[in-house]
Amino acid sequence: MGKYDKYSGQSRMADRPWQIHPVWRGIGCLMMILIPIISYAGAVLLVEANKDQRWVPMPFDLMRKIALPIFGSVDHLLANLLVALVLSLIGFALLTAVYALIYRFIGPPKLGPYDAPPERRRPRRKR
Image 1 (cartoon, rainbow, N blue to C red):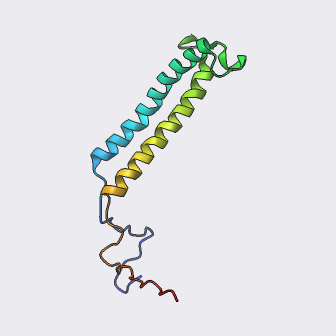
Image 2 (cartoon, rainbow, N blue to C red):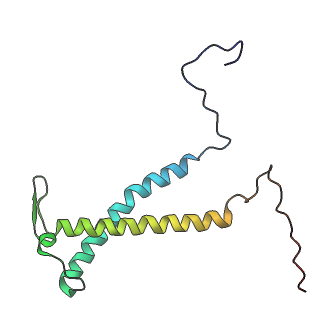
């Protein structure tokens, strides 16, 4: 606390030197909504195809009908939700990997304005 400053219970937050553009926030919010919806749609298709082709045996408890008050009875709801969860995780992982690759090639340089350049080492002479 300085000599002429008034005491404040709240600490002052330093302003960031950069701000996130609102478009990127909107794209992130849109992806958080779209990926689970697309995953559920893909899960419905995969579970139905699995029922016909028998790629992976599913237990009866996952494949039964479940009655919901608003939607009525839904076929294979638990299996659809389980497969949708796996597809969502895969979708978010792919999105993260693509973002990391793009950031690696287009992002800021490794050294900032106050960093010293790395030392150049001379190779040792073999005797």
